[in-house]
Amino acid sequence: MIRKILFGLVILLAVVQFIRPEKNLGAAAGPNELGVKHPVPAEVQKLLQRACYDCHSNCTQYPWYAEIQPLGWWLAYHVNDGKRHLNFSEFGTYTMKRSVSKLEQISDEVSQQAMPLPSYKWGHPEARLTPAEIKQLTDWADNLHDEIAPN
Image (cartoon, rainbow, N blue to C red; front, side, top):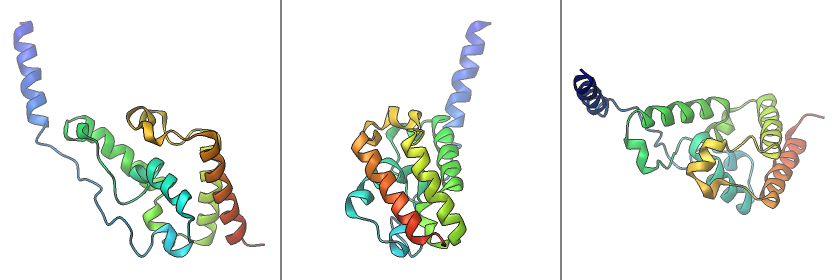
């Protein structure tokens, strides 16, 4: 009986490998990219790309394990959820009010080390931010916030 159950699970695992989520492989930079409307210093851009863009842009660099289901489904869910909250590739389409709010959230989430997510940092050690990098990102977000916020 246990053998039949294990065999059934192996077959099920093999079948689900053919059910793949759509990948987030859009253009690296488009007309609505954050840096088009609001120039971003090169060092900050590198930090954003290294620690944020996989989940918060239209261009994700997928790890090898994204090809294994159900891990690929889990990653797709996280990427779609991340883009729903903040999408640097579409930042230029945000209203001023939403842009200001997102910049506040960036500063808060990064300074509290809630972002990048611990599960992301586990698989992407390069996304771990040093205290100096955290300060650099939060200072940039705060300065841009002050620059575009209505008086």
